[in-house]
Length: 84
Image (cartoon, rainbow, N blue to C red; front, side, top):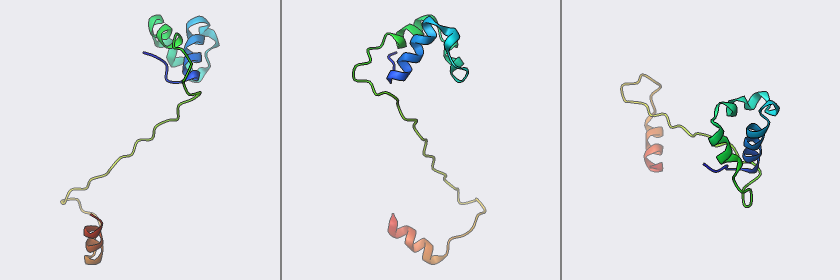
């Protein structure tokens, strides 16, 4: 699997060749097999971003009708219908 960023490729190269230099927060990469580390480290860095931003998960909460929560007024229900 190729690396997704230059920093990831560099980390895997360090983990592959000098595992003692891997920082404490990145020790999890040492659990990977040598072949996996090599696949990431061998990625060509041309065209890769320096760092990939973390993705944020957007969750939607769906309440069932039997949930006992605050009830919407008639005006609020009308506004919700207009929005949909």
